[in-house]
Image 1 (tube, helix red, strand yellow):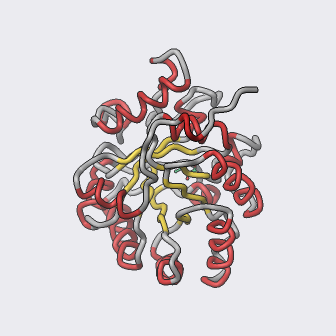
Image 2 (image 1 turned 90 degrees about the vertical axis):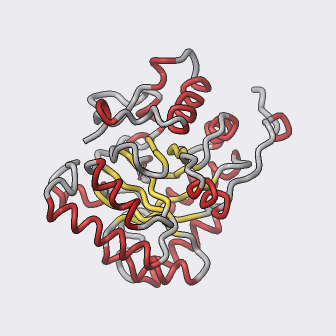
Length: 277
Ligand code: KIV
């Protein structure tokens, strides 16, 4: 089997948080895809993706589970190691899975240290204001944190399904309050999942320094993320309407990824009329 040597990849400076903040300040959209293994990481890096997320969505798309709840910390560590071996330039985020940070901030620190030592650059955790103390504790100790608000899949059983969040005025207000608490606690980034685009836009305006990454949250976030298997049309069954099948438009995986990057960068994805709420 042939392999692409790192030297053959196009020159691109490794992304860091400083550069991501610069991009955000300059209005350049940030691209993120999930990824769980080395070969695909090389491809995404080669195609110019800015950030890779080792998401606990791997429970569903790799392991065939019905939710992300069963994913363990050891499994995320394993996939983080796989991704990091293929990576040269992208900013790598790893999910803190269900049960690995909820107990207390010390547990969150131990889990985050394990992910950072596996090679992650940033950890992501789900939840509102109740996570602010943990976010502060981690960032004070040199661990960059990405929050995750709106539809938080680890809480799917408590939320009663994969439902749009923040639809009414009270729900929108709660999301905005939680986002402020997390930004003040030091979250450098926040994934905003499945919420009306006006709410996501307000979260970004309220917290200009926090890099918001939307998924089903409209066009006015600082960047966009999709689950790789969804945008490559590998996932079977009905997909949420915020997903675009980039494989339908190009002849190869490379082409689909490049289209994702250019469509996010030029603002044509997501199209609020098609993918928004
Ligand atoms: O686990 C995951 O893939 C995620 C994305 C949906 C943002 O959290």
